Image 1 (cartoon, helix red, strand yellow):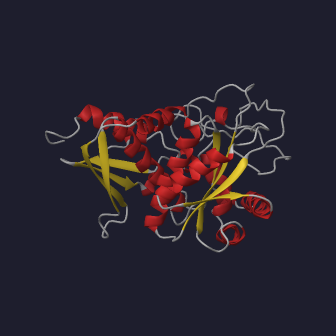
Image 2: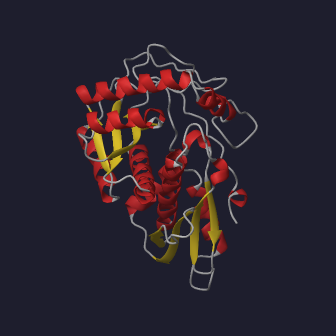
Image 3: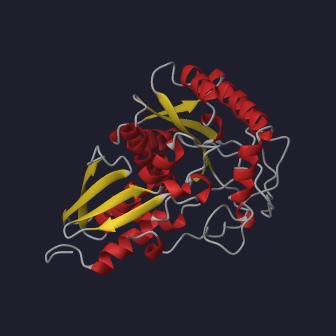
Length: 321
């Protein structure tokens, strides 16, 4: 970059944290370009899942999470990111242009940056300890500052999410294209793409919220307590590409905030990948106001369980033009 702006080492350090963002099936559908005075985020359509995510909603959501991770990383490194979202209407895959100005980090930004390397997608049972209302309020506030709605699913709205999750699992079980993509992007051992076997537990028929049936699951779930996970639905007031990008940023803020206070999280997108079921969540949880973009399980991991292994990511050089 030009003199007076971050050096290459700083930019690459920030990008190394940005690519730790969660993405659908760990597809990591982002590409980055470095200009003289800015960093640019692009959606990589070659990482698409045509059967699972035909309109690229999950891909844009994933890129939004990476964008927020990048902002957090730069803030902790002493640079404030000024983001121009969808800067080029003629190039829809150009999701953001990021300009940088000097900034003095505050403790909150440093804490969130540290949470990036500690966050995991935890598909195991959570413990019976309740999540304090103050923590739920905090993640709701963090989502709201980024223009998203975060609604806790309780009572009948939780029943709606459970019903939709089960219906989605049943429909996908009979969809050959979906099953092929799931097998293609899971069960991998020697690659930085896809979901690793050691991060996925075996399917459990007694689960309230059925998980995806990933290939070759190897994660042992030793939790014996009732699962007291809270279910949160993240939504936006519109459903265009900009809204989905911002939803990804809000999702990142929720996950990092939860990690920072010691909570475990698991992102669920399967029930929202079928339009009719997604509309049921819109009606049953968001009261026909807003469009659901993600479902999040949040709770306390049992103290008896081991830490989860790191899911590999592609090297910065592999996603940098």
